[in-house]
Image (cartoon, rainbow, N blue to C red; front, top):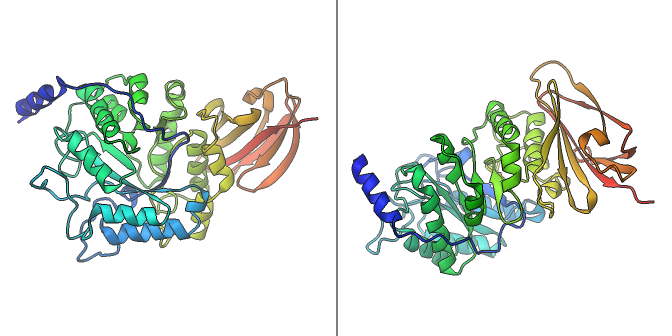
Length: 409
């Protein structure tokens, strides 16, 4: 079996052509919703019709995003993950949706999303099979790309299960070429570096950026603080490489927001929202928007934090100070502004006091004063001299997030 797999892949990649992605998308990180973390591969529509991976669930989420304030602040993609399709291709080798769970097909669902002013995303895999065992795109990339374009798909998440990571530098660009060939702008999200890192291959981020709008680097996120913290720690340790790779047109992907699920406290939910925004990361929710709590919804709809994530300068933030359990992250914004997150990694005790100067954080010294604003309290904090001190208090596993704007005299 393995020998046949290697032969099939090797023969396929002899004829690949590398063509840069040409879709004009992702000038800022994408925002939307994905079913995977919350609903996984629940295909039992007989016993769980409201929560299974099917047409009803996605229409429900489209309706909630369109009418619940999410679209108004920038959430626009509604993305199917694994388990949406049939186990066999049709007579023309085209993918088909499971006819029981998606009786009207994917084009109908895309049309419905578009009618609400939203966009529809879909999932496929670079290998022979998806992670859940459905047909992969290997040997069918042109057909699959055209199928997605014909359906009106706006976003493709391209996984890497059941494939050979050392062939990905040629294989993933083949889907880039196929998507370009359709003529439809389809956002392209790759899991390319994730699978290469798993076998100790150093990702070529220049090549990845040329071919993808988004790329996963690290493990799947789960609904727990330990999982969120492991992602933050990875981004901290790899920040130099990741900062160099990201910018308008292509972004690092720390995976979905689990705010509104079951595993995070209120402070931890704010921490994930703040850190993902400092990372210039996609804001892809994966909660049940039909039952989400008011406090979780408030975090997800925080326009001031979202504005940092969507800042047009497109610079990923950097950890600039680490003192005990406190990390300070700073992200440059347009017009000489900055966003700063004070992050408390402690898991016990009370709030920690932090005293810093703006100069220590890295603010431009030629500006004498900055106006600071707290983004979760929605409160102006006053003007601070660049060499003066700023004092704040941060809860365990929590954040304080501020923006700083130059004061003009």
